[in-house]
Image (cartoon, rainbow, N blue to C red; front, top):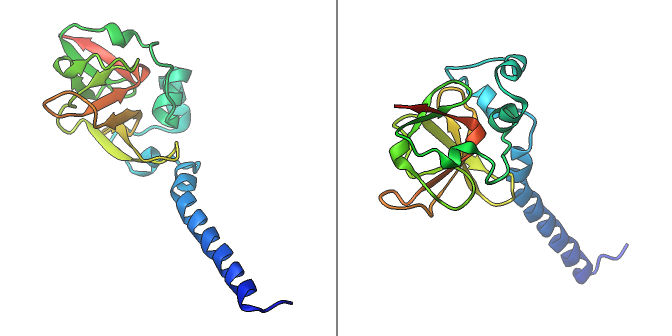
Length: 170
């Protein structure tokens, strides 16, 4: 076995590169785990997976319980401009006032401010880059993501899946 200084340093560099690679992948691997943090946190509104499947359509279940997304431009709520409140499709929790909805051009219903206490956020590394996931504060259902490219006064864009929402006029 060759124990020359150059051979030992090469092995050391390989190990260091491996360690950095593994540490960079850790958040991604953790976000892909099969456990759903929404189920683990003990939100006030909780059901078993079977009960959620009965309560929601397959597409809603995929978005709200499995952190899925809908194709852009497919939500009828994109064209909803009446006065009212957008609520969580899973539990009816009021989330956004219609007065905070705006046309973002992204293909998803977008808002610049949630109602007080309506949502929670968490880190999302599922795409390999950090994003901020938005979830319902009562059931933990995945709603979408928030970005910092929205209009004044907040500068935020809450980009929501339309199937994760319902609209109550009034």
